[in-house]
Image 1 (cartoon, rainbow, N blue to C red):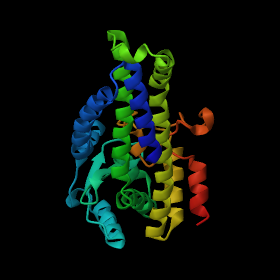
Image 2 (tube, rainbow, N blue to C red; image 1 turned 90 degrees about the vertical axis):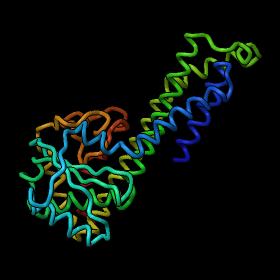
Image 3 (tube, one colour; image 1 turned 180 degrees about the vertical axis):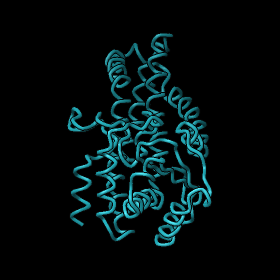
Length: 280
């Protein structure tokens, strides 16, 4: 998070100098992004669920799932989250919301059909750990920060086309600052995304460990991860904006041998996660 704030500060300064608007440029971008952030903080979960085609269910719709969530919530001291289901035969699950009192656990019908009781408990414990560890809030903040960087870069490039103020460009360092600004406009969204994905991978490993601690049975989650990752069916409801939320990358087969040592993966390698769980 400190690196993120540092990146935004540097980008704001360089873009402001290079465009000739100083910090007033960054200030306007931050005001707009702040309004967007407020809306995202309170309504991002509803948007995610709508995009995913999820529907809320009650206890009578799936008593087994409800009892599993209730028992694990009692075990970790969490309030009961809302439960949503996605009609998709690909097994997967995610958690969202802004805090434990406003949280959601969402599973696919495929995960309910293909996992046994202990495996399902492992998956639910993993998602509840995301809620307890406030990963759902952290991920929302990180997505907003990535959006701020992207917004700043986009506005800077547009200001060059429209023609910004000349005053800051005409000094001795003006040309250099302009070149640095263009390079940052191209690379800063990439850097921001890499930081986002790095945080996402670390929180997945933490949720694995916390989930295993909750169930006291790491093999249940390890077996579930193996089943979900080996299932060949991609999740149709997922997209690039929501992929990082799921317990396993929903785009099957696209991240197995990624370039740059998996820098652009939303999840740690399944083999690594299973190995760590089985070593507990």
